[in-house]
Length: 458
Image 1 (cartoon, helix red, strand yellow):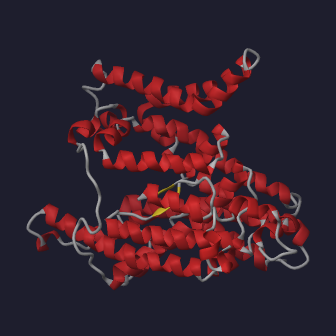
Image 2: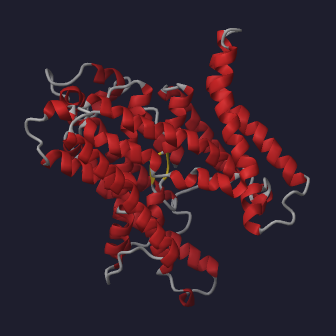
Image 3: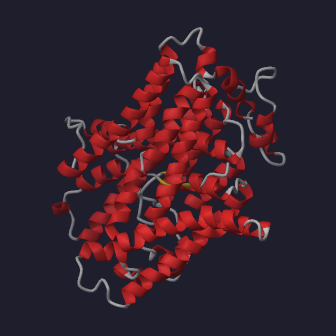
């Protein structure tokens, strides 16, 4: 489903080289559904699992309608026209920094694998091309494109040697889980072929409370993807995505979540942040490359042995890469500030407050949930708790809400130049005489698709 959604977005969505994958925002409502399933009402755990999945399917199908309404009614596009560089600076920064727990904290769980991966990636990606570029320009090209694959192969082989040599035979189970290449017997337990089909868990179960709770995650997916699209456009050399493009993207995201619910996926999708950083690192901003990669995504999901083979890569290897990729995305957010007045105390106030709240508020919600097992919101309405705990556990969502409110209410009039609107606004509009002509180059539909699409989405 991630492959299909990626294909939809690159063909008729934003048309940016973004990859869609499962969003962490859906963890809260899905766990809430699982907790509501009383084990005493089921004869075995498998029956309880099927009931949980069917309920999740129903909630995701209903909740996806929210994004369709926000997108195809152009409400999201109207909201996007209120954006400015002052808003995008903290939002894109938090898009990268908000996932810091997947970075060095995971590297430290198996430092003998994670740290060499981090050091090797920096050396091979940055230093080797610089010192060997005088030999042949092709060397720079090869290391820019394939250095991460080379580093992963080397460190993965090193981890396999440590595993085979018995280095982790007498360590704690947690260390084995993070360091071993044969954890959980992935290769032996994965099926050779498994083709997903609609309603594979059974008929969806529709409940109002769970559907409303899932809407919080669906809305968060739209917020996070919006910030990620601006980061992608910046690294891909495209103009900032106009409001109508963001609208049709959110609408298609809703269709993608609807399909995910039908096919039984346990979570909806949003834009992959790590692939944005990879775009900047490799300098490959072609949507055709992303479209071809969807074929690999679908292939590895159907042929389980191949997917399990790559899933056996120890997590600290990926965590080391994330340290680089998430950092690049966060730095892209800082670059938006060049289009606004960096000396304006108003801008400094808005960016600083939005950035701090975008990091600290989700940190509080996540730490509270980790220690207590439930989010801070505890009312008698479970659906309301899920919405609050999901929305405020998302850094980009908090940063976008705070910064957009402040930037459009705090001395908004007469400060267009300080806010960077003179540069930003032409890209967000589509009316002739006001929009930038370069938008059509990046965001127009392929072939003759525009003949079948309402003009408000063109």
